[in-house]
Image (cartoon, rainbow, N blue to C red; front, side, top):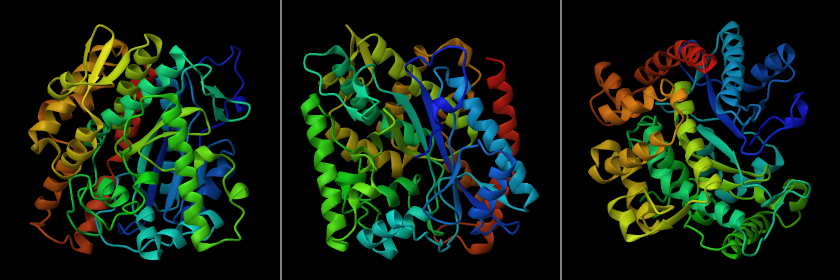
Length: 449
């Protein structure tokens, strides 16, 4: 996770609360459409051209990660991210490389995993065959700051506040992000193939999270759902603190099983760094939604705008986000300052599964996603209407990027079963070639806000 340090940018006015920020992960392809391990070279050249651009290495040598400057205005942080991506794209082209921006590479490949101590520990814990999943998946992370005063930025820890509206607001924000996960992952699904196989509409979610709820025990976190699966809601501050502590102890136990000598405190500066759940409170003092596929810049920003205005309303108006019977039949219904959501058992056991495997083909998760969109759009500033168009189209047409990739693969001769390497490479190149125009058009729209 890599956001720019706000102190690194000079501003005339002090930073306000409710900052938004983003991180994107990308893969590198050569001009034949094959995954290539040139991340270090790209990072080196980018840093030479722009030392302040927040580009860093990821767990595999075929991947890079790009952050942005967090800002109270979503369009400002989005512009910072996309202008940085534009620079990386230009440099990649000069190096005869392509940026693959879709959740998984459609064909089969074996990533070269890094051997840094933190990655080596994960390799030992997960096993080499399972750990490579992390090098085959790329995601999008959207950040929104926690309510004022609930996070101690000096000591980088949560404050346990008794009888506090701000504490309740933090819990409401946290539970909302869990409830909305199946809708967000559906809207941004872009990974119908993994290692050449059509596992699910959102194969990345299935193989990355894994577990019994997704009926995929070969997934990266299949046996460590406490650390990487979609978690239950929390009803009290104590519950949340206790859960964080339990995750830390669980991860430390896993580390000690494979290496009793490792200095855990040196490896992890903050206990909030020791979990990789789809919804995470992290050491930057933000609530991080990290369960979504990478996708077109236009799609990423549109979803982030919706999420930002939802969290803004919940925090500023102290909306109570409650699992209720109404939330089962009418999810995201707002009445009497209560936002109704389904019990987490429905979200995690049913909606998560159908979102990943079936997408809009499943009536329940389609209706759930449309209700979220209707609620979110109703409270989003009209200035962002043109930015929302890609998501509006997805909802109206009930066709995601995954659906479009499947259609394109069929036009190229794929019918069902395994996607052969030549077709996968050609498909990946065609997708990568569409990034530049989408990036340019999205920047133009953001500059007009």
